[in-house]
Length: 133
Picture 1 (tube, rainbow, N blue to C red):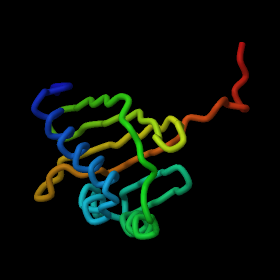
Picture 2 (cartoon, one colour):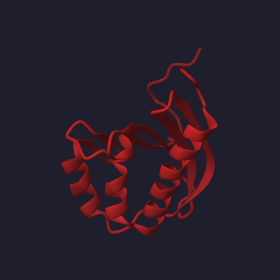
Picture 3 (spheres, rainbow, N blue to C red):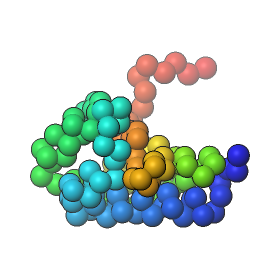
């Protein structure tokens, strides 16, 4: 298995860029098109836990707009020709909060690249459950 094939990284980056443009433009149809249309698709967000494409679509329909954000760092790793993970670190330009977003992308037959799992979070000031040594 080839890890980090430049061609695969470029394909995953293209889907990543379409998704980011759709977030900026609140393009629900494009956001939906980026995800695998399947009940097994998962998206964990800042305030939501969504299992299945229908739950994700319902959430998207409820969003008036997304907080504006600026990319701080993008990291993409591919595993063979059909699986990639993208990691985004961003800053919300309206609040200065730092966010993270991870997507697992898979090349599916007859559909091409789709997000099968996504996790979005904001960086907290500290972890009250963490005990330091």
